[in-house]
Length: 350
Ligand code: CP
Image (cartoon, rainbow, N blue to C red; front, side, top):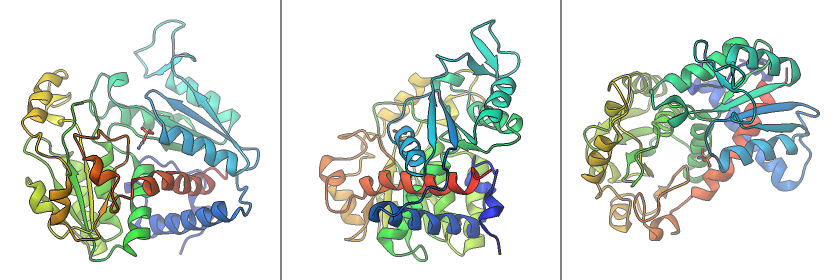
């Protein structure tokens, strides 16, 4: 058995660093914090503590849930725009008096607060797949005292994955025997990382769902993530299947989670340089991958529609579905607050 002390100071970069038991412990603690928040009971677990948040990309949900969460627990979340400090970069990428090596940034902030959180993917790393994850890990390497929380890199979005499975637990009553469908869906934007589907399938497989991944050919997830998801499904007694048919995937689903992600085949390191126009062609050939009322009819009558948001209405999903009775997207967004409070309270109590 483990206790809250076992989480202290641990980085939260990928759910693969956490066992099923630890993830379920965090879910239970999230539910407890949610109940305390809703009933107005105090839960100031991080009084006078500071989280430094570095956002290389935009955010509505992540920034506000971390900030509100720290306030509610008696601490403070400090927002840092990389363009308004000295842009934290890897060794060898420095520009005099414009950037600062991550090893220095991390060691400075490590002395001043109790946690650091980073969001980075896509344009800030030139769409070099995996580089953003390396940057998050570089912060973790140099921050010796405090945990690093991944607020979404190019490979993982672990806080989103936790919110997703808390939402499944609340709406489906558990995980065993629940068909959880992560599906690609069309978007006019090809600038979306693979982190959300990666963390969603890992999270759902870890807790024992029957996970189905659906996407057109050419939009495969990372091979290591697929292998890790298979292993987690075997360990949990769940299952993991992949199909190239959205309709087949939706059949008798308990949960559907259709969203766009870019093609790993047209970005480095597989491609020599980002080839977004090729990705656009691939996307445009699959405009029928939309979550509409007809597709929802294939799933169970009470199937839940999920999306991490922001979504592309009219492309990934129709208004009828996202605003309909099966949609749980706002519960899912709210759960970002509760799971992140649990993660911060457990890891930042340093
Ligand atoms: N789902 C999510 O991470 O939302 P934001 O990009 O608004 O933070």
